Image (cartoon, rainbow, N blue to C red; front, side, top):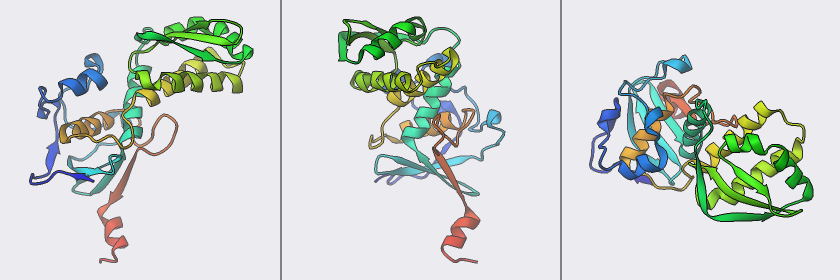
Amino acid sequence: SVLAKDVRPIVISKRTDLEKAELKIWDQKYVQKKTSVKDQEISAESSQKRFPELRYIGQMHGTYLFAESEDGLYIIDQHAAHERIMYDRFIRQQKPVPSQTLLMPLFLSVSAADVDAVTEHRDEFLKLGVDAEPAGETSLRVSALPADVEDGEAEAFIQDILTLLEENRSIKTSDLREEVLHYAACHSAIRAGELLNIRQMREVILELLNTEHPFTCPHGRPCMIEVTTPELFKLFKRT
């Protein structure tokens, strides 16, 4: 596990606490300036819960982040947390989702039914940053993806969309948008097992607590668990 050695717990209070020079690469990869969290206390007014001041503790197995407050402990799944952050960012965008053109188009062998489904929803996919078109009766040519989806995640992202269309051929446009944004958030989020430095972890926690639903990811699984001090006392049979 990675712990903040030889330093006192760092209070996460304002965006300006972060050293921007050290976060330049992180911001370029994960943070969109137009939707970044403003200089404010780390609380989530929109989630109907006023969060206490948190102090970062450390990271475990490159997967879980730990923070403490005066009232207890917060355990955060970094992938699920960043997935929530990215989804909320995508869903707020009223304009078409920014796309990136692949250096080399991705060609996929699929069923004829998949080709028909992609063709039927092509206009909506373009608005979502996905440029996929038939390259034959059973082949697709993918030339662009949402800007935040990593190149290495491209094929898995498209396969998720094809599975969605296969399971629901009559999907509504609004539902298609929501599901595609779910997948885009998942495939653009930091991964489990990815080691983060202290400032990157603080950024994740800060942005998570300012999302609409900080305790669950877009797919409904937990991304943050709160363990109160009385609950910890009970676990250790303390009075």
